[in-house]
Image (tube, rainbow, N blue to C red; front, top):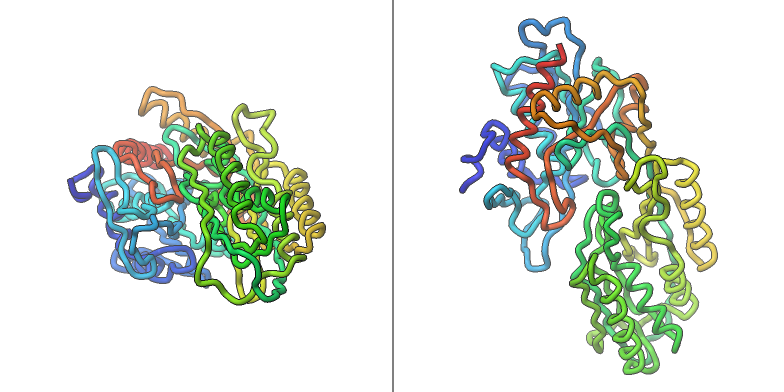
Length: 479
């Protein structure tokens, strides 16, 4: 079945349209301009700011002219991940959509349902001549996936609405009313080298599930960068280790699912034996959470002439060993909610600097500050240079909320089910938007999305349809 044949057609039509436009984070000019053209072709008021955020306004329909303005919000960028055998070019190729039963997914790449489905819902509403709704301000932001820079740059100049429906949640029937704040940090190691000597081993860690560092962190999946640190530390216990090259992960907000290193040692066979023994233990540890982990160590070929010196190599390995990762604290107020965590997201060399990018999340500011301080101390003790490159606020729960009350009442009347009102251990733009518009009243929801930020990302078609009916009725009830 093709996407044009699935329901709701008016939504999936626009999802297909935007999927044809490359829209990875920091590559949003084309999709932003697409939204502007869409609005102008329908004679709708539209604004595009310097950050490429787009605001499209549509008057209320008959009977809603004096109703309070509602902001319908999502983000236009997507995480760009693909399988090793995919030749997809995210800078120019359209996402190839595949329908299988109730599932919509892509061909060996991320789907972009996060948050393309919000854009598709919004365009379908803006395009409609029959739906009843109050005055609307559709706000589509940029670079949400790499630091929420669009929301951070947002000004309130063209936004009159004080009710915000954020369509960037991934579980149908769950209404989010609070989210974690966070900070992105860098730990830099200045590389000093010496001539290569000894025997070289190539270490590769892959086969991990990965996933969203907020939504999936509670699943206790393995982090490839941390596993690589354990492997290198196990070798270092027995003999000196010099790093020749090292890398891991690809996104600050994705659990690292691959890491690579070439090392130089005196006795490669002894190092392989230590790695093999630890690999067996690691696979046993993660047999339930991440059963397909692969850890391989083979003789390396085509080597450079230089390796990191002993001091730098030792410092990097020690940092990888002692730096925390994953869940740190669970909420005592909301059962099952991660309160504080961190993710070793990227390990990459740029010039003569090796940088660890580590993302910290917490709904408690003091705990966020504590983990940031821990990272700073880990860096200082191992010869690294710490910096905090960005921070975003938590979205705190509000006891009184018309947006939440109407959403809950609408969902219950439509489905006969009581929705779950909850918080999420991930950064949502609601916190930054509320910082810009302090009196905003917000709630976040969305259809069922699975394995976001991975090539296994998929969207439930029937859930999209049910949530479409809900959004239509919700707007109708905002008279």
